[in-house]
Image (tube, rainbow, N blue to C red; front, side):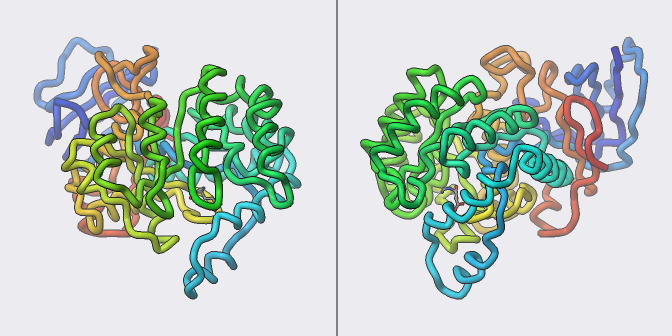
Length: 397
Ligand code: NIG
């Protein structure tokens, strides 16, 4: 058993009812938080093995990046450049990544994934979800899911990302809900669908999601990214853990989200990169919805895992308070993955909860090289992540 004491914490953001503490300390044992509080109230009955003095820095829960597409090969910078020159985003670019991903091979996909995880940890991310969705045939989708399951906390099956070029939509859907789902289900926790004009319509999306539910998978939905549509209402109807993008929402969509357990996940880096309007975070929060912020790391619409940037954007441009943005990128992301604290630091499955710093929760820490977290937005874009800890182990800094 190893017990570690963190001292010298100028500001500790617990993202819990305990709120924000100044001049704080934190104790972890074997990857779990044991105690948090004021430094001058430290209990004296602990056998401390190691003390880490953070010398006046800020500690917050590691970012919970609940929406990424990290398993891919290929480069789409030309598509991005054309978009910056005025082209609009077309989901068809997914096909370019598909070719590269299919031919990459398992070893290269794994290496790329590990590099992306390391880069994200250097920006304070400690919990990762990734989707499949760039293989788009049974063999490649299963390969991607297996690689992901070795490194990522939660894996989502997104065979219904796009109908591969040249394929018949009905035949492809048969494959998705048939052999693809059958082969992939044991490697993933979630099923997702790109419910959007140009991808899958409501009926097709319902079919995919229902097949996943029948296999025991949880539901997530890509919805309302490029225009109003059925994504949000379908997600709420099927009890999805999250509906992601949510750029174009009717009043009814917002009301449904507010009355549900479905988290509205906002992807601000993607919105900027596609020049879509930023998701209406203020409107969602004012209505009472739970929101998450995620990076949407992918080669087409958001080639970044920089959660610091996403949080800064939410404060500066989406008019969230710092508290709201921090919560959305930690506890909100955890709720979107159903890894949030439901009591005594445990998630709904009894695992150490993510996205909060309370006793019993995972010792996933993000140390900012700043005396308070507002510096994320006050000094936008400055290097701010000093150290990252996953289950008490330093993985960056
Ligand atoms: O979340 N919207 C659908 N899927 C990805 C982008 C896919 C791509 O263009 O490669 C997204 O933005």
